[in-house]
Amino acid sequence: MPSHRQAYTLLTLTALFWAGNFVLARAVHASVPPIGLAFWRWFVVAVFIVPWGWGELRRQWPLMRSRPILMLALGVFSVGAFNTLIYIGVQTTPAVNALLLISATPVFILLLAPLVLGNKLLLRQAVGVLVSAAGVLLVLSHGDFAAIADLGRHGGNLWVLAGVLSWALYSVLLRKLPTGIGGRGLFAATVIIGVVVLLPFYLGETFIQHRPVHANVTLLLTVAYIAVFASVLAYLFWNRAVAMIGAEQSGVFIHLMPAFGLILSALLLGERITTADLVGLALILGGLVVAAGKLWRH
Image 1 (cartoon, rainbow, N blue to C red):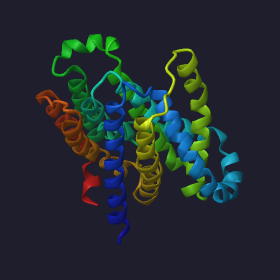
Image 2 (cartoon, one colour):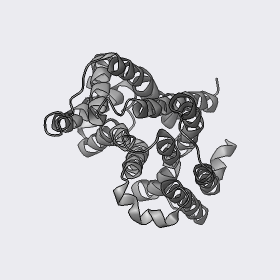
Image 3 (cartoon, helix red, strand yellow):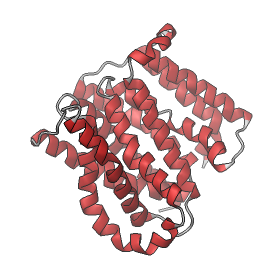
């Protein structure tokens, strides 16, 4: 299979797995606390991934040790923060909103790449970012732009945007990894870092906020899905695709998440999709086409 076609297949499956992850997190938000869900998800992943990737992690360790800040950032922004922030967001915002906002990830990548990697931001890209930003604001306000001033009282969407920013930073920083770091070793390292970072927050949620995780069938099935499909397979698929075709082009496939997620949200959660949501999504997509239209022609 040609490399681009293989990468596109991996990214399509990743978008499907992640869409299911966020719809499921919304479905169980009343019974499973968000940080507890994130912690146990990654703890289960660590049990399987760390032994599997240990040999490669040991071989890559000298290179990782020479880039401690970069490795810490990759672990925090991916495993530690990305899903955790969105799990917190879907406590108070519908899965539809979260998935529409996540579709802005490629625009964040385009905006951050010049700052982190030193790439030039072209005029076309700047215009595209502004168009997509208008779409994000439309989703946030549900068509009432006067409501933007009250976003602080409706923080779910802002938590989701923080998660989007976190994943965009992770994706861009992947390009700074030296040759020789990747695959199982990188995944094992970021999982270890992420679990360690999440632990004090999980303890705080359990003992200070008094929101413990209760073991039951719902929790077990939820963790099983997000650990296997939305964690192990999706992260390996994403990292492989980014290595093959780059973060900017890979980011385009994030837009499949709303397509999958809107269907799942409507069927499984009965959530309503508004005209403002659809127009906002169109603006986000339109901004991406303006900013990075050449990526679609590969």
